[in-house]
Image 1 (cartoon, helix red, strand yellow):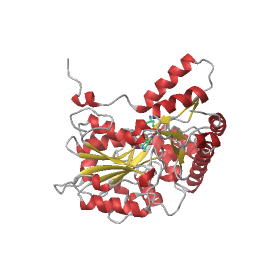
Image 2 (cartoon, protein in one colour):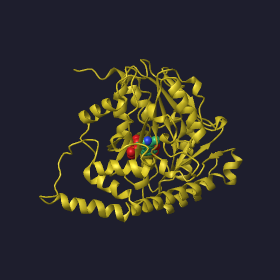
Image 3 (cartoon, protein in one colour):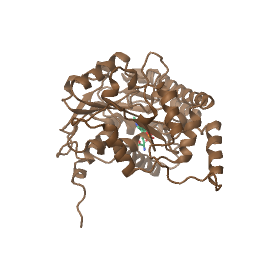
Image 4 (cartoon, helix red, strand yellow):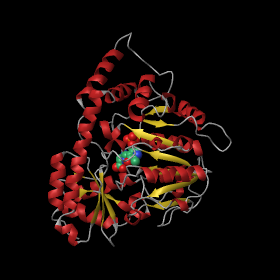
Length: 410
Ligand code: PL4
Protein backbone atom coordinates (compact mmCIF):
# COMPACT_ATOMS: atom_id res chain seq x y z
CA UNK A 1 0.00 0.00 0.00
CA UNK A 2 1.00 3.63 -0.36
CA UNK A 3 2.65 5.24 2.67
CA UNK A 4 0.99 8.01 4.61
CA UNK A 5 2.60 11.47 4.34
CA UNK A 6 5.51 10.92 6.76
CA UNK A 7 4.89 14.21 8.54
CA UNK A 8 1.60 12.95 9.97
CA UNK A 9 3.34 10.76 12.53
CA UNK A 10 4.72 13.94 14.11
CA UNK A 11 1.32 15.46 14.83
CA UNK A 12 1.03 15.83 18.60
CA UNK A 13 -2.62 14.87 18.94
CA UNK A 14 -5.95 15.07 17.16
CA UNK A 15 -7.20 18.49 16.04
CA UNK A 16 -8.31 20.46 19.11
CA UNK A 17 -11.93 21.18 18.25
CA UNK A 18 -13.05 17.63 17.34
CA UNK A 19 -11.33 16.53 20.59
CA UNK A 20 -13.55 18.93 22.54
CA UNK A 21 -16.57 17.63 20.61
CA UNK A 22 -15.62 14.06 21.57
CA UNK A 23 -15.41 14.95 25.28
CA UNK A 24 -18.73 16.77 25.12
CA UNK A 25 -20.36 13.75 23.47
CA UNK A 26 -18.90 11.35 26.04
CA UNK A 27 -20.15 13.57 28.88
CA UNK A 28 -23.63 13.81 27.33
CA UNK A 29 -23.76 10.03 26.90
CA UNK A 30 -22.98 9.40 30.58
CA UNK A 31 -25.20 12.28 31.80
CA UNK A 32 -28.43 11.97 29.88
CA UNK A 33 -30.66 14.97 30.41
CA UNK A 34 -27.77 17.38 31.10
CA UNK A 35 -28.49 20.70 29.34
CA UNK A 36 -25.04 21.36 27.92
CA UNK A 37 -24.18 24.90 26.84
CA UNK A 38 -21.20 25.63 24.61
CA UNK A 39 -18.85 28.52 25.26
CA UNK A 40 -16.24 26.42 23.50
CA UNK A 41 -15.79 26.54 19.73
CA UNK A 42 -15.99 30.02 18.22
CA UNK A 43 -19.03 29.23 16.10
CA UNK A 44 -21.56 31.94 15.27
CA UNK A 45 -25.15 31.40 16.39
CA UNK A 46 -27.18 34.43 15.31
CA UNK A 47 -29.10 34.50 12.00
CA UNK A 48 -27.78 36.12 8.85
CA UNK A 49 -28.92 39.72 8.63
CA UNK A 50 -31.85 40.62 6.32
CA UNK A 51 -29.92 42.71 3.81
CA UNK A 52 -27.39 39.93 3.19
CA UNK A 53 -30.13 37.29 2.96
CA UNK A 54 -31.99 39.37 0.40
CA UNK A 55 -28.89 39.87 -1.75
CA UNK A 56 -28.14 36.16 -1.76
CA UNK A 57 -31.78 35.21 -2.46
CA UNK A 58 -31.98 37.61 -5.39
CA UNK A 59 -28.79 36.23 -6.81
CA UNK A 60 -29.98 32.63 -6.45
CA UNK A 61 -33.13 33.60 -8.35
CA UNK A 62 -31.07 35.07 -11.15
CA UNK A 63 -28.93 31.91 -11.29
CA UNK A 64 -32.17 30.11 -12.13
CA UNK A 65 -32.48 32.07 -15.37
CA UNK A 66 -30.72 31.63 -18.71
CA UNK A 67 -29.40 35.18 -18.65
CA UNK A 68 -28.31 35.20 -15.03
CA UNK A 69 -26.69 31.77 -14.79
CA UNK A 70 -22.99 31.73 -13.91
CA UNK A 71 -20.63 28.74 -13.84
CA UNK A 72 -16.93 28.80 -13.05
CA UNK A 73 -15.61 32.32 -12.68
CA UNK A 74 -12.90 33.48 -15.06
CA UNK A 75 -10.69 34.32 -12.13
CA UNK A 76 -10.58 32.25 -8.93
CA UNK A 77 -9.66 35.44 -7.01
CA UNK A 78 -13.31 36.52 -6.94
CA UNK A 79 -15.70 39.04 -8.47
CA UNK A 80 -13.95 42.28 -9.38
CA UNK A 81 -16.71 44.33 -7.70
CA UNK A 82 -16.22 42.48 -4.41
CA UNK A 83 -12.44 42.85 -4.55
CA UNK A 84 -12.90 46.56 -5.22
CA UNK A 85 -15.31 46.96 -2.34
CA UNK A 86 -13.05 45.11 0.11
CA UNK A 87 -10.10 47.30 -0.93
CA UNK A 88 -12.11 50.50 -0.56
CA UNK A 89 -14.29 49.87 2.49
CA UNK A 90 -11.92 47.82 4.62
CA UNK A 91 -8.54 49.12 3.51
CA UNK A 92 -9.34 52.65 2.41
CA UNK A 93 -7.63 51.73 -0.87
CA UNK A 94 -4.28 51.29 0.87
CA UNK A 95 -4.36 47.93 -0.88
CA UNK A 96 -5.54 47.64 -4.45
CA UNK A 97 -8.29 45.28 -5.66
CA UNK A 98 -5.73 43.19 -7.56
CA UNK A 99 -4.00 42.48 -4.21
CA UNK A 100 -7.24 41.07 -2.71
CA UNK A 101 -7.87 37.36 -3.30
CA UNK A 102 -11.36 36.27 -2.26
CA UNK A 103 -11.50 32.84 -0.65
CA UNK A 104 -13.75 30.31 1.03
CA UNK A 105 -12.46 31.32 4.46
CA UNK A 106 -9.36 32.21 6.44
CA UNK A 107 -8.65 28.67 7.58
CA UNK A 108 -8.68 27.30 4.03
CA UNK A 109 -6.28 30.05 2.95
CA UNK A 110 -3.88 29.34 5.81
CA UNK A 111 -3.62 25.79 4.46
CA UNK A 112 -3.00 26.95 0.91
CA UNK A 113 -0.52 29.60 2.08
CA UNK A 114 1.53 26.91 3.77
CA UNK A 115 2.10 25.36 0.34
CA UNK A 116 3.54 28.68 -0.79
CA UNK A 117 6.46 28.28 1.60
CA UNK A 118 6.83 24.50 1.65
CA UNK A 119 8.80 22.41 4.10
CA UNK A 120 12.02 24.43 4.23
CA UNK A 121 10.56 27.52 5.83
CA UNK A 122 11.30 28.40 9.46
CA UNK A 123 8.11 28.98 11.38
CA UNK A 124 7.44 31.25 14.36
CA UNK A 125 4.07 31.32 16.11
CA UNK A 126 2.55 33.25 18.94
CA UNK A 127 2.07 30.88 21.85
CA UNK A 128 -0.84 30.31 22.39
CA UNK A 129 -2.21 30.37 18.83
CA UNK A 130 -5.02 29.09 16.59
CA UNK A 131 -3.93 25.44 16.13
CA UNK A 132 -4.12 25.48 12.32
CA UNK A 133 -0.81 27.39 12.08
CA UNK A 134 1.18 24.68 13.86
CA UNK A 135 -0.75 21.61 12.70
CA UNK A 136 -0.61 22.80 9.09
CA UNK A 137 3.11 23.48 9.40
CA UNK A 138 3.61 19.94 10.67
CA UNK A 139 1.67 18.49 7.76
CA UNK A 140 3.79 20.27 5.14
CA UNK A 141 6.95 19.21 6.98
CA UNK A 142 7.90 22.70 8.17
CA UNK A 143 7.91 21.70 11.84
CA UNK A 144 10.91 19.43 11.58
CA UNK A 145 11.22 15.67 11.63
CA UNK A 146 10.58 14.98 15.28
CA UNK A 147 7.31 14.73 17.20
CA UNK A 148 6.31 17.44 19.66
CA UNK A 149 7.30 17.45 23.31
CA UNK A 150 5.24 19.09 26.08
CA UNK A 151 7.03 22.31 25.13
CA UNK A 152 5.96 22.05 21.48
CA UNK A 153 7.74 21.17 18.23
CA UNK A 154 11.50 21.50 18.37
CA UNK A 155 11.86 23.33 15.09
CA UNK A 156 9.01 25.79 15.55
CA UNK A 157 9.84 29.01 17.36
CA UNK A 158 7.22 29.65 20.02
CA UNK A 159 6.74 33.28 21.02
CA UNK A 160 5.11 33.20 24.46
CA UNK A 161 2.27 35.74 24.81
CA UNK A 162 1.47 35.95 28.49
CA UNK A 163 0.05 38.48 30.97
CA UNK A 164 3.68 39.19 31.96
CA UNK A 165 4.43 40.65 28.52
CA UNK A 166 0.95 42.07 27.91
CA UNK A 167 0.46 39.29 25.38
CA UNK A 168 3.01 40.80 22.99
CA UNK A 169 6.00 38.53 22.35
CA UNK A 170 9.73 39.03 22.59
CA UNK A 171 10.52 39.09 18.87
CA UNK A 172 14.24 38.55 19.36
CA UNK A 173 13.61 34.78 19.60
CA UNK A 174 12.54 34.74 15.93
CA UNK A 175 15.25 33.58 13.53
CA UNK A 176 16.08 35.31 10.26
CA UNK A 177 14.00 34.30 7.20
CA UNK A 178 11.07 33.07 9.29
CA UNK A 179 7.40 32.94 8.48
CA UNK A 180 5.79 34.65 11.47
CA UNK A 181 2.16 33.83 12.26
CA UNK A 182 0.55 36.73 14.08
CA UNK A 183 -3.13 37.05 14.99
CA UNK A 184 -4.72 40.28 16.23
CA UNK A 185 -7.29 40.49 17.79
CA UNK A 186 -5.85 37.32 19.08
CA UNK A 187 -7.41 33.93 19.27
CA UNK A 188 -7.37 32.75 22.03
CA UNK A 189 -6.13 35.56 24.33
CA UNK A 190 -8.37 38.34 22.98
CA UNK A 191 -5.39 40.74 23.09
CA UNK A 192 -5.13 43.35 20.34
CA UNK A 193 -1.70 44.61 19.28
CA UNK A 194 -1.26 48.39 19.46
CA UNK A 195 0.12 50.47 16.62
CA UNK A 196 3.50 50.69 18.35
CA UNK A 197 3.62 46.93 18.82
CA UNK A 198 2.77 46.27 15.17
CA UNK A 199 5.42 48.78 14.12
CA UNK A 200 7.92 46.73 16.12
CA UNK A 201 6.72 43.57 14.41
CA UNK A 202 6.92 45.03 10.91
CA UNK A 203 10.35 46.56 11.53
CA UNK A 204 11.65 43.28 12.93
CA UNK A 205 10.29 41.36 9.95
CA UNK A 206 11.87 43.77 7.48
CA UNK A 207 15.23 43.80 9.24
CA UNK A 208 15.32 40.01 9.42
CA UNK A 209 13.88 39.07 6.02
CA UNK A 210 10.79 37.52 7.58
CA UNK A 211 7.27 37.35 6.18
CA UNK A 212 4.34 37.96 8.52
CA UNK A 213 1.17 35.98 8.03
CA UNK A 214 -1.25 38.33 9.74
CA UNK A 215 -4.57 36.75 10.71
CA UNK A 216 -7.11 39.52 11.17
CA UNK A 217 -10.20 37.28 11.29
CA UNK A 218 -11.53 39.22 14.30
CA UNK A 219 -10.62 42.76 13.19
CA UNK A 220 -14.28 43.80 12.99
CA UNK A 221 -14.51 43.35 16.78
CA UNK A 222 -12.10 46.21 17.42
CA UNK A 223 -14.02 49.04 19.04
CA UNK A 224 -11.08 51.11 20.27
CA UNK A 225 -10.31 53.40 17.34
CA UNK A 226 -6.65 53.76 18.37
CA UNK A 227 -6.03 50.06 17.65
CA UNK A 228 -5.03 48.99 14.12
CA UNK A 229 -7.58 46.88 12.24
CA UNK A 230 -5.13 45.80 9.58
CA UNK A 231 -1.36 45.34 9.39
CA UNK A 232 -1.34 47.69 6.40
CA UNK A 233 -1.95 50.63 8.75
CA UNK A 234 1.75 50.16 9.49
CA UNK A 235 4.35 51.73 7.21
CA UNK A 236 6.41 49.13 5.36
CA UNK A 237 3.92 46.29 5.97
CA UNK A 238 3.28 45.78 2.29
CA UNK A 239 6.89 44.68 1.86
CA UNK A 240 6.68 42.00 4.53
CA UNK A 241 3.09 40.93 5.30
CA UNK A 242 0.24 38.87 3.95
CA UNK A 243 -3.12 39.42 5.65
CA UNK A 244 -5.96 36.93 5.88
CA UNK A 245 -9.48 37.82 6.91
CA UNK A 246 -12.98 36.45 6.85
CA UNK A 247 -16.69 37.17 6.79
CA UNK A 248 -17.21 34.23 9.17
CA UNK A 249 -17.44 36.10 12.45
CA UNK A 250 -18.67 39.60 11.51
CA UNK A 251 -21.36 38.43 9.07
CA UNK A 252 -22.12 35.00 10.54
CA UNK A 253 -20.62 33.28 7.46
CA UNK A 254 -19.06 30.36 9.35
CA UNK A 255 -21.31 28.05 7.33
CA UNK A 256 -21.75 30.21 4.22
CA UNK A 257 -17.91 30.41 3.81
CA UNK A 258 -16.23 33.55 2.54
CA UNK A 259 -12.93 35.24 3.31
CA UNK A 260 -10.04 36.92 1.58
CA UNK A 261 -6.27 37.20 1.59
CA UNK A 262 -4.26 40.28 0.71
CA UNK A 263 -0.96 39.57 -1.01
CA UNK A 264 0.74 42.87 -1.79
CA UNK A 265 2.45 43.59 -5.07
CA UNK A 266 5.64 44.61 -3.21
CA UNK A 267 6.13 41.32 -1.34
CA UNK A 268 9.04 39.30 -2.74
CA UNK A 269 10.74 35.98 -2.09
CA UNK A 270 14.48 35.76 -1.51
CA UNK A 271 15.07 35.23 -5.26
CA UNK A 272 13.27 38.48 -6.08
CA UNK A 273 10.15 36.85 -7.55
CA UNK A 274 6.75 38.12 -6.49
CA UNK A 275 4.88 36.25 -3.78
CA UNK A 276 1.67 37.41 -5.43
CA UNK A 277 2.51 35.58 -8.68
CA UNK A 278 3.14 32.33 -6.80
CA UNK A 279 -0.06 32.83 -4.80
CA UNK A 280 -2.11 33.31 -7.96
CA UNK A 281 -0.51 30.12 -9.32
CA UNK A 282 -1.49 28.17 -6.18
CA UNK A 283 -5.04 29.46 -6.00
CA UNK A 284 -5.63 28.88 -9.72
CA UNK A 285 -4.36 25.33 -9.32
CA UNK A 286 -6.14 24.29 -6.13
CA UNK A 287 -9.15 26.57 -5.89
CA UNK A 288 -12.06 27.33 -8.20
CA UNK A 289 -13.18 30.47 -6.45
CA UNK A 290 -15.48 31.11 -3.50
CA UNK A 291 -19.18 30.36 -3.88
CA UNK A 292 -20.66 33.08 -6.07
CA UNK A 293 -23.72 33.20 -3.81
CA UNK A 294 -21.51 33.81 -0.77
CA UNK A 295 -19.68 36.52 -2.72
CA UNK A 296 -22.97 38.31 -3.37
CA UNK A 297 -23.67 38.14 0.37
CA UNK A 298 -20.22 39.55 1.14
CA UNK A 299 -20.73 42.33 -1.37
CA UNK A 300 -23.99 43.32 0.35
CA UNK A 301 -22.33 43.08 3.76
CA UNK A 302 -19.98 45.90 2.78
CA UNK A 303 -22.52 48.53 1.71
CA UNK A 304 -23.95 51.00 4.22
CA UNK A 305 -26.89 48.82 5.29
CA UNK A 306 -24.73 45.69 5.43
CA UNK A 307 -22.06 47.39 7.52
CA UNK A 308 -24.60 48.69 9.98
CA UNK A 309 -26.22 45.24 10.32
CA UNK A 310 -22.80 43.62 10.86
CA UNK A 311 -22.03 46.15 13.56
CA UNK A 312 -25.23 45.12 15.34
CA UNK A 313 -24.23 41.47 15.15
CA UNK A 314 -20.76 42.11 16.51
CA UNK A 315 -22.14 44.34 19.30
CA UNK A 316 -24.31 41.41 20.34
CA UNK A 317 -21.33 39.05 20.70
CA UNK A 318 -19.23 41.73 22.39
CA UNK A 319 -21.99 42.20 24.94
CA UNK A 320 -21.99 38.43 25.51
CA UNK A 321 -18.25 38.70 26.14
CA UNK A 322 -18.76 41.35 28.80
CA UNK A 323 -21.47 39.21 30.50
CA UNK A 324 -19.00 36.29 30.59
CA UNK A 325 -16.25 38.52 31.90
CA UNK A 326 -18.49 39.75 34.70
CA UNK A 327 -19.35 36.16 35.71
CA UNK A 328 -15.66 35.24 35.79
CA UNK A 329 -14.94 38.21 38.01
CA UNK A 330 -17.47 37.04 40.61
CA UNK A 331 -16.44 36.14 44.16
CA UNK A 332 -16.10 32.38 43.63
CA UNK A 333 -13.54 32.87 40.85
CA UNK A 334 -11.69 35.55 42.83
CA UNK A 335 -11.43 33.08 45.72
CA UNK A 336 -9.75 30.60 43.33
CA UNK A 337 -7.25 33.28 42.27
CA UNK A 338 -8.63 33.34 38.72
CA UNK A 339 -7.44 36.23 36.58
CA UNK A 340 -9.56 37.38 33.66
CA UNK A 341 -8.27 38.96 30.45
CA UNK A 342 -10.69 40.57 28.03
CA UNK A 343 -10.24 44.03 26.62
CA UNK A 344 -13.62 44.44 24.92
CA UNK A 345 -12.22 44.21 21.36
CA UNK A 346 -12.50 40.46 20.76
CA UNK A 347 -15.08 37.70 21.11
CA UNK A 348 -12.97 35.62 23.51
CA UNK A 349 -12.43 35.89 27.26
CA UNK A 350 -9.17 34.37 28.46
CA UNK A 351 -9.01 33.28 32.10
CA UNK A 352 -6.08 31.95 34.08
CA UNK A 353 -6.52 29.36 36.81
CA UNK A 354 -3.06 29.64 38.41
CA UNK A 355 -1.31 26.33 38.95
CA UNK A 356 -4.12 24.29 37.39
CA UNK A 357 -4.11 22.02 34.37
CA UNK A 358 -6.30 23.37 31.54
CA UNK A 359 -7.94 20.04 30.70
CA UNK A 360 -8.74 19.42 34.40
CA UNK A 361 -10.44 22.81 34.64
CA UNK A 362 -12.25 22.10 31.35
CA UNK A 363 -13.51 18.77 32.76
CA UNK A 364 -14.51 20.36 36.10
CA UNK A 365 -16.52 23.14 34.40
CA UNK A 366 -18.18 20.60 32.14
CA UNK A 367 -19.11 18.24 34.96
CA UNK A 368 -20.24 20.89 37.49
CA UNK A 369 -21.82 23.51 35.19
CA UNK A 370 -22.49 21.49 32.03
CA UNK A 371 -20.66 24.25 30.14
CA UNK A 372 -18.17 23.47 27.37
CA UNK A 373 -15.11 25.72 27.16
CA UNK A 374 -11.76 25.42 25.39
CA UNK A 375 -8.64 24.41 27.35
CA UNK A 376 -5.86 26.93 26.83
CA UNK A 377 -3.16 24.30 26.45
CA UNK A 378 -4.86 23.20 23.23
CA UNK A 379 -3.53 26.43 21.71
CA UNK A 380 0.07 25.83 22.75
CA UNK A 381 2.30 25.26 25.80
CA UNK A 382 1.88 28.83 27.08
CA UNK A 383 -1.89 28.28 27.21
CA UNK A 384 -1.51 25.83 30.10
CA UNK A 385 -3.63 26.82 33.13
CA UNK A 386 -5.83 29.06 30.95
CA UNK A 387 -9.38 28.53 29.70
CA UNK A 388 -10.90 30.27 26.69
CA UNK A 389 -14.56 31.28 26.89
CA UNK A 390 -16.24 32.03 23.56
CA UNK A 391 -18.93 34.70 23.38
CA UNK A 392 -20.61 33.14 20.34
CA UNK A 393 -23.97 31.99 21.67
CA UNK A 394 -27.58 33.00 22.09
CA UNK A 395 -27.94 35.58 24.87
CA UNK A 396 -30.16 33.33 26.97
CA UNK A 397 -27.63 30.47 26.77
CA UNK A 398 -24.77 32.77 27.71
CA UNK A 399 -26.75 34.14 30.66
CA UNK A 400 -27.68 30.64 31.81
CA UNK A 401 -24.06 29.48 31.49
CA UNK A 402 -22.91 32.47 33.54
CA UNK A 403 -25.52 31.77 36.22
CA UNK A 404 -24.11 28.26 36.56
CA UNK A 405 -20.50 29.49 36.51
CA UNK A 406 -21.19 31.72 39.49
CA UNK A 407 -21.45 28.53 41.62
CA UNK A 408 -18.35 26.85 40.17
CA UNK A 409 -15.70 25.65 42.65
CA UNK A 410 -12.38 23.92 42.09
C1 PL4 B 1 -13.51 25.66 14.69
C2 PL4 B 1 -7.75 33.17 14.17
C3 PL4 B 1 -12.70 29.29 15.73
N1 PL4 B 1 -13.90 24.24 12.85
O1 PL4 B 1 -14.15 30.48 9.18
P1 PL4 B 1 -12.80 30.88 8.67
O2 PL4 B 1 -12.12 29.71 7.99
O3 PL4 B 1 -12.83 32.09 7.81
O4 PL4 B 1 -11.92 31.29 9.91
C4 PL4 B 1 -11.32 30.35 10.77
C5 PL4 B 1 -10.42 31.04 11.71
C6 PL4 B 1 -9.32 31.71 11.20
N2 PL4 B 1 -8.49 32.38 12.00
C7 PL4 B 1 -8.70 32.42 13.32
C8 PL4 B 1 -9.77 31.73 13.87
O5 PL4 B 1 -9.96 31.76 15.20
C9 PL4 B 1 -10.66 31.02 13.06
C10 PL4 B 1 -11.82 30.28 13.64
N3 PL4 B 1 -11.57 29.74 14.92
C11 PL4 B 1 -12.18 28.95 17.10
O6 PL4 B 1 -13.01 28.54 17.95
O7 PL4 B 1 -10.99 29.09 17.39
C12 PL4 B 1 -13.40 28.13 15.08
C13 PL4 B 1 -12.70 26.82 15.21
C14 PL4 B 1 -13.35 25.49 13.23
C15 PL4 B 1 -11.88 25.55 12.88
O8 PL4 B 1 -11.17 24.60 13.07
O9 PL4 B 1 -11.45 26.60 12.39
